[in-house]
Image 1 (cartoon, rainbow, N blue to C red):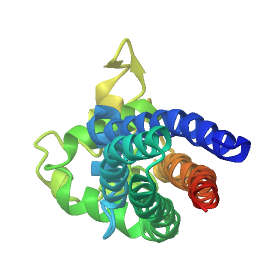
Image 2: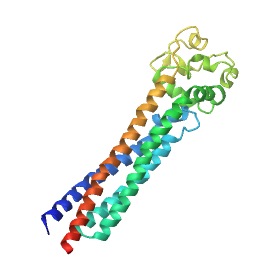
Image 3: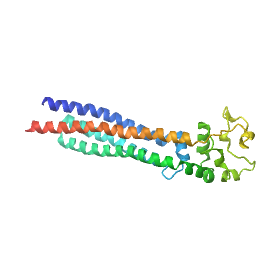
Image 4: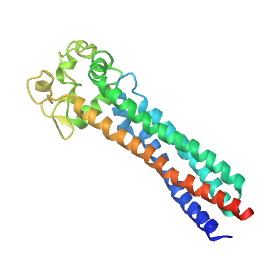
Length: 246
């Protein structure tokens, strides 16, 4: 076996070890987005037309993360056995994985700005009409971020939740200043006299969307860029095998 072939073979096997690790990273990010209860609360609160884009991107990452293991296996077998057929399959599948991961990153980048544009209307709509069905996520977000409503406590004015309160409460208890997870003064808080959070949740939710979009974009595009090296190594090995044949 020539020096060039041995070098390309070693580089391809080494790359596939890193490639498998990247598959673990992709699976980890996808699973984290889908099962983390705190993330789910945020996703339920972001009530806009494309609110599912995080999940769509996560499912793409999951599918291709699992596919990475099969593709890496073909690459290793092709390198060890010097099989141009397996290397051909490896190159073909690697292009598919590359496109899928790049699509997940682009999906996150494209829909991030669309979601942020719809935040004002979407958050207000959730509180005005759907707070009862999303009270759990909203309460969790308001407690964690120490905020109230989308733009502020006034989002609850004339909402279906407020109109249903027998004690004339203006805002939920989750908007109150807490001490040991209990409102400091529930009566004053819910009457908007004192001890309630006056800042809305929009800015923190925008920051959350941007931060998690960066993770999806980074994982999808970063690992896709890494796979270019795998393509180069596999093509170099195939060319080396062709030269040795003749």
